[in-house]
Image (cartoon, rainbow over all chains, first blue to last red; front, side, top):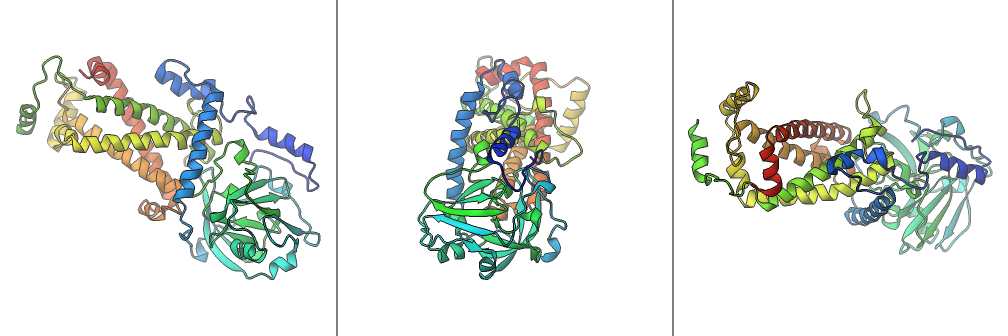
Length: 258
Length: 211
């Protein structure tokens, strides 16, 4: 998943779409699955090619939506992710994205303003100094990547629920959506947004969040897979509309709780 | 022949031709499990390739899903089939007494004798309704591997919500290894099982039509 590519800080949306397309499996960009050889095992078993790629994908996506609901049901809003001692922190912590580290967005700290929108009372934007003035907590938790590896990190910042309270968010809304500097986006369910360990993160391992880990702000949630933890967050919106996300729109399970 | 085996045969009607060896529920759950396992293993190999535990990858041609997202869709769809079917099988296996009748007791001396007989080509399968000691050991072993693979899979899938289970396996990273080795055990069983079914075709017939 760390195959590609190229996102200059002055993001050109057209270029970005092209880049995203390159990440899709080559022969069938619109399909998440590949037919033929990849279904060899099934064909071998049944002696015929029973699965047509498009309809298989349709059924699999239906089951993935069912799995969203199953995971929402399993999610316990009061259950905390295990925490670890400082000595367990992985140093250096792995960089992971769909582009190489040198292409990570560079966000100017003086120009930065976190935009807040959707179902909130106060839509004013927040400067970094204003964000840094919020109460902060530190967590040492395990990041689990969708690829299977995991690493323990130390993140410091403001509980998202505290921020949502301050901006007067309608917490009966279904989702919180995040837009990031490089064009990445993701969205999460409200119970996860209100989980005590879901954090607007400003520091990693005691230092101001470096560029590679998402300067100036990432959102850390130890109850979801790594790709649901957006970096370089520029905008957040509380919404009832399902907006998916960068990887979710390509077939990764939306809820992706752990 | 040991007393145990004689005793067991006495309890099992001496299957004359035409008697049902595998009741319908065994046959249905067997084949549903076969399909679920092939999907789980094929997609699991693709998922493994995204972050391999060892210095090898599975050849993409024998994996399912095309890429990580596709493999995960298959894996988390077929898991329901595997788990529900497996649960039905375990409940009926215990409730009907089939496990007790067919799979136990397993005596080490019999396992040794039957293993030796198997390798010298003297192990006979005249009565399909009675399992030899090696069969009992392997069938019980693969049932246990199936239980371990489902539980370790849950531990990897939900290391926060089911963190107590994950802890039983020694944590998230250790659970991945347990999951892998349970897969390896099942694949090993699968290879042997298919070879034996082909060598003793009437056993395959019995698993399809019951007799």
